[in-house]
Structure formats: C-alpha cells, structure tokens
Amino acid sequence: MPRVRRTFVPLILAALAVMPGLSHAGGAAPPDNRSMVLLLTILGAISAAYLVAHFLMDRIQKRMLVTSGIEYVLLGVLLGSSSGVLSDHTTLAPVLAFGTGWIGLLEGSSLRTASLGRLPVRALRLAVVDLFVVGGGVSLVGFATMHYGLDIAFNDAILAGCVLGCAATSGSASSTRLLGRRFPQLLTDTDSPTPRPGTVYELVAATSRLTQTFAILAFGVITCLFHRPIEGLASSPVAAEWLLLMLGLGLALGGLFRLLVSNESTENQRFMAMVGIICFSTGAAFFLELSALTVNLVLGAVLVQGSRGKELKQSLNSTLPPVVLLLLVLGGVVWVPVDPLQGAILAGAALFARGAFKLVSGAVAAAGTPLRPDIGRGFFAQGAVGLCIALSYRLIFHGSEGVDLVFTAILVSVVLSEAAAPRLLRGLLVDAGELRQDIAMTDLPARPAS
Image 1 (cartoon, rainbow, N blue to C red):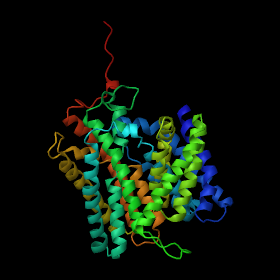
Image 2: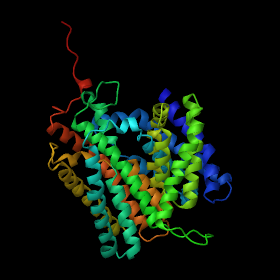
Image 3: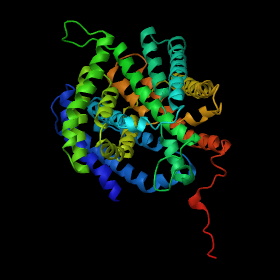
Image 4: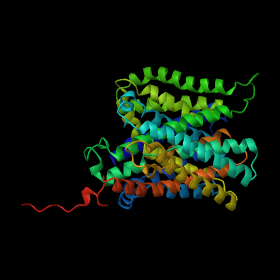
C-alpha cells in the first residue's frame, strides 16, 4: 500500500491541479462543473482499476507471462459508450495531452549520459536498423493499404502510413520487466532490475528502450513535415522551422526548469515541480500543434543530466504504471467504432507487417556479428509509446481522413503484441541458453536442511 500512495495518489492531485490549466493553454473554455465531473469520473474509474491491477493482475501476469492491457481498454470502451460526461471526447483532449507528455518525459529521463555509456555495444545498431526496416516497411504497407485498399486520399494515406510506421518501430520494456520478475536469474541480483551484463536479455532490454526514443523523435519529425497552417499567422513556418522550434522548446524549457528542480530536496517536492513542468511544456506543444511526446523527451533528457539526475529519474519511474493504465483506459474511451471490414484489413496488415519486419530487421542487424539471426523475436512488445503516438496523432491531426482507422489498428496492435511478446522473448532466451527451464528460481522447493 505505501507504493500505491507514493505513485497514484500524487498523480491524482497532479491531474486535479493541471487539467484546468492545460484546457486553458489549449484554447478551451474555462473549466466548469461539467469538466470537474468528467475528471472525477475518470479518476474514480482509474483508481478502481489500478487497485485491481496492483493487487491481482500483477500476480496473474507474472504467473501466466502475459502483459496485455485489453482489460483496461475494454473498461475505457464501456465508459466511453455511456451517455455520461465521458461521451464528449473533446473535453478529454487536455488529459490525453498531459498523459502523452508525461510518457515523453519518462522516456527522456532514460537518456542520461551515464546510462547511455553503459549500453550494450550492438544495441544502437539493432535500434537504427529497426527504425529503417520496421518503420519504413510498415509505413509503405500502411500507405498502400490505406490508399489502394481503402481508398483514402493520397496525402492523408502518406501521413497515416508514417504514423503506423512510427508506432510499429516503438518497442516496450514491459516484456523484459515481466521476465525479470518471473526469472530472477536474468538479473544481477534479486533486489535490482539491472540485467546481467553481456546477455541477450540485456541487449533486448536496451534496444527496446532505444526504439522508443527513435520512434518519438521520428513522430516529432512527421508532425513537422505535415504541420497544418495555424490561424492568425501571416506566414506559416516551413517544416524545418517547426522542427527547430520543437527541439528548441524542449531544450530551452529543460535548461530553465533544471534550476527549479535542483532546488527541490524531497521526492514529493520534485514530483510537484515536474507536474508544473509537464503542464507548461505540454500546453505549449498542444497550442502549437506539435508533438508533446518529442518536446518532453528532449526536456526530460536535459533535466536528468548531472548529479541530481538519478534521483529525478527514480521519482519519475515510480509513476509509470498508473500513467500507462490511465492511457489504456482513455484510449478505450476515445475509440470510435469503424467499419469492421476496413478495421480488420488495416489492423491485420499492420500487425502482420510489423511482425515480419521485426524478424527481418533482427536478421539484417545480426548479419556479420555473433548475434543470433532470430533476435528479432525479442522485440515484439509494443507498449505506452506506441499508444501515445496514436493518441497524439488523433489530437494533432483530428479531421484527417482515416484517423479512426489508424487509431484502431494501433490499439489492436499494442494489445495483441503485448500479449504475445513475453512468451516470444522467453522462447528466445531459452534457445540462447539463458533460461534452461520455464520455472522461476522463487518457485523452486526449499532444500531440506542438512
């Protein structure tokens, strides 16, 4: 229970403080009783779901090696299909922006120079090849399916294909975390989440984190390339200018807010300082129709450098489970039913293409190295970053043709990939000799005293 208080209750207080400010930053009307009812409804549902997850689902996932979030997505679909305040999706935009911004900051916090210097030698190679092979391949498949198969307009189909590619290249550390809890022999010690060095398990964990970073950066570039004109500007900036503005915003706010965070000594003080930072940076990105994911990634990377960076990273990491749960539920809430045949065609094409290109990417990156050519089996997980890309696409490019289809395809891909990934990774580790049997050390019977 102490962990619940430390991670979820502060997040509730943060949302209560932040939602009105974000709404105003995004150009919405001042908050009223309806918005407060909306927020309390969300928090009540999420609180109940989080408690169930904390005390029940964690044990089930560890025992059955499954990390699917379909139960939370279905909860969101049920909440969104009601006639209550959650049925108005426009009022959820500030909450969605805040959640995606938080995930961006979490990913940025993993980019400490000290941590990057300890990455396995071939992790960068695997992640770069994954970006071009998986991202490029799924983008082409997505574009062809949307334009030639579903008759979506050419420009909208290109944008949709690129978004599918960005979401597809994004990995997730959920599978490695789950296997680390299930099989402590993969870790340096049972009290540390650090993988044993020089192992396939360590390489998969590091590469998955890098693919998330590359996916966020690629999506930021996409938002600049396809940026729509903003009303009131005499001349709209070109893509390169939007890109410089987006990166500069993250760098400038990161440098400015380092002074604020460095003066906060306790974990709660640092947490509330981060709430204000995310509120400001996400509101700015939301107003400019830029990727809050990318802005906060850069901001987080700047914040965690230096001697206080490790403490700040630990404070942020403790908030990951409730934030992911929040986004899964809200993803279900804002989901709009699509034509079943079209949805099945696009989701099937995207899911099949992602799986195939993940295997090809691993084989290409492993060529000429001691790596296993089937190492791509370890990269099927697709978690919070993929979902945030889908939500950000919906927020920034609302009204574009095919948005609901792409959102549905990514949501299906995330849920199914997360369900299958742990067992695929376990099979890879068994074949690599790092797991000799499907039994955790903690499950072994105690040896009789001699």
